[in-house]
Each structure stands twice: as C-alpha cells, then as structure tokens.
Image 1: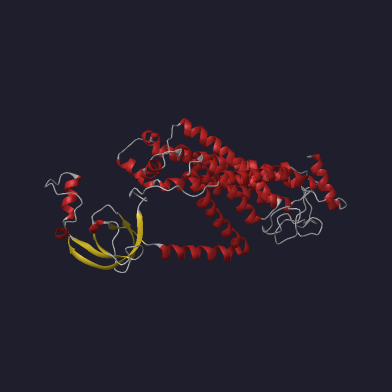
Image 2: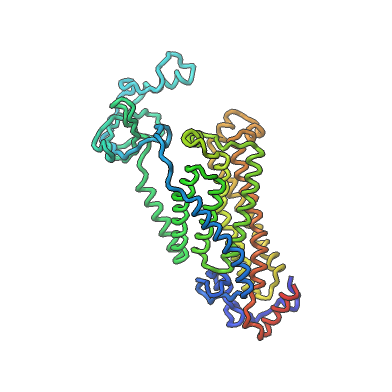
Amino acid sequence: MTSPQQTPEPHVHPHDPVHGHGHGGGGGHGHGGGGGHSHSHGPAAPVSRHLRKVIAAVLIPFATAVVVGLAVLWPGGAPAHERTGVGFDRQTQQGKVVSVEHVDCKSVNAAQVPPTGDTSTPEGREAADGRQGQCEKATVEVTTGPDQGRRFVEIVQPDAPRQLDEGQGVVVAYAPDAPHDLQYSVTDVNRKLPLALLAGIFAVAVVVVGRMRGVMALVALAVSFLVLTYFILPAILEGSNPLVVAVVGSSAIMLIALYMCHGLSARTSVAVLGTLISLLLIGLLGSLFVGWTSLSGNTDDYTGLIHGLYPEIDMSGLLLAGIIIGSLGVLDDVTVTQTSAVWELHQADPGMGPRGLYRAGIRIGRDHIASVVNTLVLAYAGAALPLLLLFSIAQSSMGTVANSELVAEEIVRTLVGSIGLVASVPVTTVLAALVVSADRPASGGGKPTAVRGGRRRRAK
C-alpha cells in the first residue's frame, strides 16, 4: 500500500501530458502499453524495452507453437461414411406444407402403437388416445434436391408437440430404403428466417453500442466459428486426439479474438497469458477428474451415434475438449476485465505499486468471481433441466443423482471450469500489476511526480 504522504496527488490527472501516458487510453477505450502498437483512442502507452522483450519471449514461442500445431493437425476434411439414417445422420431436404386437412384420427389410423384393448398400460392408453380427436393430414412438397416437386402426406396427431400450418417451411428426411410412399417424412420446421433476423438484430446492437470495437468483435466471432468448423471438428473426426486439437484450436481462437478486439498491447498480452495459464489448469484438472470418475463421454444418443460412426474417436477426450472450449469464452471475459481494471487503477493513481494494485484489483475480481461462477452453474443446470426433472419424478436421492454418469459429467464440467475461472482472477491480477508497474516511460524521470512514483516502485 502507498504511504500516507505519497497518496494524495491532486495535480495528477489522467490526461496530464506527463502522467497521462495513455494507460487505457481514457474511459476504458485503451489497450494498455503497446509500444506504439496500441489502437486505442488515446495516446499510446509507452512500454519499456525490457518489458517488451519479456512479453515477446513468452508470447512469440507460444504463438509459433500454435501455428505449428495448426499446420500439423490441419485436417483434409471430415472422412466420408455411409449414412445410417439415424438422428442427424440422415439425408435431408427442404420442403413446404402445401395444404392441411383436419380428419378424424380413427380414419387415418394415427396411433403409433397397435391397440391392445387394455388401457391400464401406457401403451394401451397411447393407442386409445391416438384414435380420438381431429388429426392433421398435411400435404408436403419437396422443394430441393433430385425429387423437387414430389409430394407426400404427413399425419400429425392432436397431441403432437409440433403442429403444421399451410405455407410453412419444413425440413424433410429421405430414407431411400423405405417404401416409395414412406421415403419422405417431416423431421423439423425451417427456422432460417427468424434465426437470421435475430442474428442481424444482435449484430446491429453490437455495432451500435460497441462501434468499431463491436465490429472487430463480430469479425473475431466469425473467425472463431471458422476455426471450429474447419479445424477442430474435422480434425477430431479424422482421429486426432480431441484434447490436443481443442488446446491448439482454443489457443488460436484466443490469440486471434483477443488481439483483434483489444489491439496489440501489453494489456492484451497479459490477458492472453492469464487465459493460457487458466486453460492449462482446466486441462490438467479435467484430465485428472474425468479419468478418476471414470467418465466415458458416451452418455446420450448423439455421443453414441458418434462412437458408432467413428469408433476411433476418444470419447473421454472429446468430453475434455468440450470442457476446454466451453470455458474459453468466459475466461476471456474474466482476464480482459481484470487486466483492464488494474490498468485503470494505475491510471487513476500512477504511483501505486504492484502490491497496492493487486489488492485493489482482487477486490474487483471477487465480485466478478461470484457472478461468473453462479452464471456457469445456472447455465449448466438450465441445460440439464429435463434430466433433473426425470430424476425428481423418480424420487431419486441427491447422492444417486450425482453419482449417475449423466449428472457427474455436468458436475465435473461445471466445477473444473469454475476452478479455472476462479484461478484466473488472482493469476491475471498479479501479472497485470507486475507488468503495469514495470511500465515506466524513459522520458518521465525529470518530473517530480514521476520521480516520486519511480522511488515508490523501486522501493517495492
């Protein structure tokens, strides 16, 4: 902490030509000291030559390793396989509902289960209910593919979760081995227009509020999807180790996104280092506890289908890869926020030493930890809500629920990611405090306040 006689410096202002060195660029727009590389709206924050060398000595080998990893693991595309016709592995085309006619369910034999006459069983009740009420007899036309213009009939029961309307766009599945009249069936509705509109509203909101920073964030988001689509997913399908692929791909996304959004600066470099250290911790803890709890990663129909199509894929490694990729986005937020907080604290009081900066920064970080951890837990709980409802219906004990692989997988995912997030706060705060304290412009030694700040830093 600073001494009482040194703390008040009323003549120092963040925009003072001597002390306003552009740490943060004012108002949160800056990117920290970048030695002329800053893209902030304020003046560039000078960084000592030695500090630039230290940061470069750490980040350049890391970036080089990421590029080499991308080159070595880069896939030639997802390997071909014979479609099973199960789940997502079906041939699909676009279609349109031409007409909808309401008919008596009994006349079209809509029941999925043959009637047994015994309504005491769930099957019997389903069969009886399926023959009552008004069903929808929809005529659907295939609008894409080799069978464009072909029509078929789809029967929708009154209690079906998805009803069809005339003129509605739908997704139809094609089963070539089925009888001619049963080759096509409706599997979903076409949501492209509302999803595209929602994405457009999101992009406009980001650009209007974030301006150029928002534009760069959208570009970084697009790059992240490209890395995920053209590197991570095909590389895993080709049989590369999912954990290694996730680490390389996540590192590439992190480097591109952070530097693209926040500029080439010491501030961004500290956030990159904090994120990297936290990702390594998440990877180590995830590997340890996924193995210790004997999680197979094959817990539902989708993972079972993947394992059936590509048995060479390490499913537990795929689980680890998901933990790392899922934690990356929140980690970026935490490390960038903590680094910015320390930089702004230094701007407010340029004479504050690393210990004082750490103590002030960690107080901000504690609030961030509480909100982020709660957000993660609630996000995973919301995603697993149907599963939790099933356990509640079965009146299972909490121990039984937690011990099941489905829930244990989410517990490990949540807690490992949360530990990495919690650790990222002190790690990033320490790095930021040390770097910003070492950031001393060579030309400021002749001014009284700069000398006082310098003595304080030397004393620390």
